[in-house]
Image (cartoon, rainbow, N blue to C red; front, side):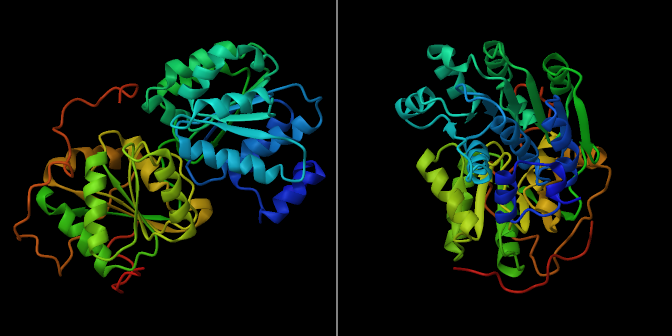
Length: 412
């Protein structure tokens, strides 16, 4: 089914064509028609399946048929980077129309954002905390808001934003349509959906805990003190054009980025110790391909959409299986293939087993014949897992064998 079959406004169809969209993805095919009718939407789909276009396009189409009356749409996302991507998509799809959007996120001066709100853009894309701050002083600006979108809802739960989201919802008294998109659907998010949505159209693409099709996964058993050495070995001896490396902490991310840069790779960092300007610059450079390696923490990289990521490497095993699903969803975007490697120490095998049970497959274990697993290595507590205990509450906190060839890495 081509995009023309949706009956979108001609000016939107023009932008869709110029942006290279031809056939809709399954989540777009499922969500756009009922959203065009004003239905509430509850959509679960893996990252990289086109969820942003699935809600932006029908919203813009409906706005064009309505009289302009202030802020009409609020989109909430968990991170600045994801919010910026959504707002950029709004601008791209609306470039031939007179519809306007603005970005409201923390870490930037609040004055310009307050002035932007008072100019009454049609669409506001925001992170919860900063939006709530501005709504407290400018509640009257949102009286005309009729559409609410919650994107990456499960990530907002993980990051502790659920109370803020509920406060925002309470202030949107004119809400008529709500669209909730999520990569996974834990019970708390399902409960929230039940409270917010009115007879929603439910779209579920794939199993709720499944990983995206086309991602080859493998586990690399290694002593905890040799994780850095193994990672550097993989980077030097495996062809990986574009790599996203996940660490547990921002301290580990900084240390790892320094070591990888010493090996001659171009590296970007994405974690909470970086300023908004540094994070924006890092994302822009990685998207352009100026940096071959991006080192990031879980929270900083939530929902990022970079089409060309070929490899995702986890230097630790997440305690929560859904975090693993989120991580590896950064590759294999929009039907492309990708590789996901996870470095697992002996005391992390239980956590890996929980992940395998949830995703429904056992990851092949790979031991490299040319790596010395008995070498001495410095202890690296920031790269190893935290002591294992009961699973934390959510609100608080392939192919086996070899990698892609043994060609030397591309460096810049």
